[in-house]
Image (cartoon, rainbow, N blue to C red; front, side, top):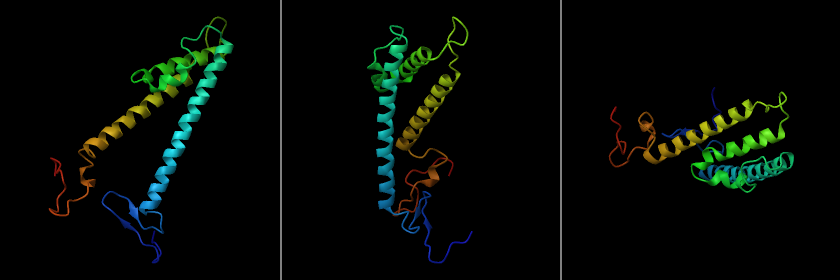
Length: 162
């Protein structure tokens, strides 16, 4: 695909395009980044409100059968290490309180709930991996994406395979 002559595109070493009809500028990136953070925080607040309300409704459906207090539906997401299993236990309680039994004396299967939690944990671990990778560099194979030091003409930290 050939771009029109009036379009200026320059790709830097880290793969970001610059000056593509004004979309690659620093101000645009900061604006989109800010919108992403604000919308993400809004989604977190909405999720917590929904989860707390759902927990309150489950208490009315199965009074006395839920394991945790209603406030734990929100607080569980912020407890270190506890946030890996407490929200799932609360979701299990909500699921079983609001689902009709599959057969008399049994609970409805929670396959979808287990899949959701598995994907949530996988995404959380992936985020942790990305954050750790950002702290220690781009990793061994991504080292060539680091900017070149202008004074020496070399990468700041040369990988062992180069």
